Structure formats: C-alpha cells, structure tokens
Image 1: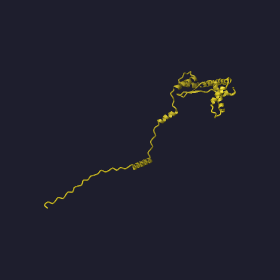
Image 2: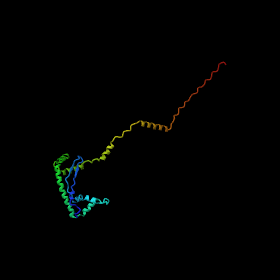
Image 3: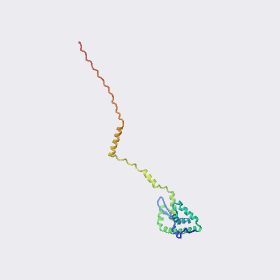
Image 4: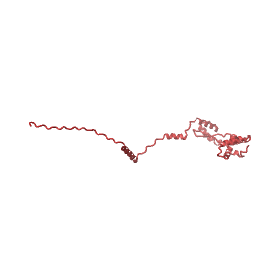
Length: 206
C-alpha cells in the first residue's frame, strides 16, 4: 500500500544539518549530511499529517501511530521511501559540496584554532571537537555560578542610627527600669558614744 505517500512527498523531506560546538573555544563545526533510511524519510514525510489527523484526547503518541503505519506497508511501499532516501542524500550532497567550497577560509581558521592538520576535512574537525568535548572539564551551569556569587556577597550594612531610634531605645530602657524591683542599700549603723557628765567637785572644808 503506497497511497499514504503523496506524489510530492520527497519535496518536504530534507537531510538534517548537524553542527558540533567546541566547549573550550565556542567554535562550531558543521558535519557532512548522512543518508536517511527509508523509515526516517517516512517519519519526516508523514509526521505532520499523522499528528493533524489524530484525536488529541486519544492518548496515542504520534510515533507509535507512525510505527503502526510503517509496519503495514509492503515491500513496494517501503521501497518508495528507500528511494526517497537516495534522492534526498544526492540533493544534500550537492548542497554540502557547494557549502564546503564557499567556506574554505572558515575551515582554515578553525584548523588553526584547534591546532589540527592543514588537510583536516570538516568531518575530521567534527571528530576532533567531539574528542575535545569529552576531555574538557564539566562546565558550571549559570545557576551554579549564581549560587557561588551569592555566597561570596558581602554582609548587609547595619542600619543607620536616627533620632527616632535613639528615642525608642530610651523609652525601652525607662520601661525596663520601672518594671524591675528597686533595692535600696541599707545605710551603715553608726554608734554614738554618750559623754559622761562630770560630777561637780565638793567644796573642801564645808
């Protein structure tokens, strides 16, 4: 059964452009396109139509529905998509070779940055970048950097003393004194010596 593929199905299928980025330098290297399998072409050609025709509440994934459709295709039907993969690959290769020719200067710049052999192709540079990325130390996420910066921030400054604050502290001090029991110190007892009165001397010869 080949009726589910429209006659212009190959026009909406294209090779995926893959780019790898070097985490140390930020350089981006484009890789040569790979040939798509018949099943990959089928997914690209039929995914939009299948998703649009599905009931949103059915709970069936689009990928599962496509897999069921693919399994129902006979050898002829699957062969149509295999041939589509060849057509897409030839078209993508032609586009790729034109891109490589127009970006030769950029390739030389990346070769120098990565200290790669001068004859390195784009695929060679891509393989080199993937090796470098595996050897590179793990990068901190923006959230982790923000947490580190926050931890090192200086402590907040103390609030300035104002006239209102001074008055408030005086009132609190006065309340504390009035609520606490007052203990009066006892004064030391003083002892006074009584002076003895001298008796008057008696008159002699009386």
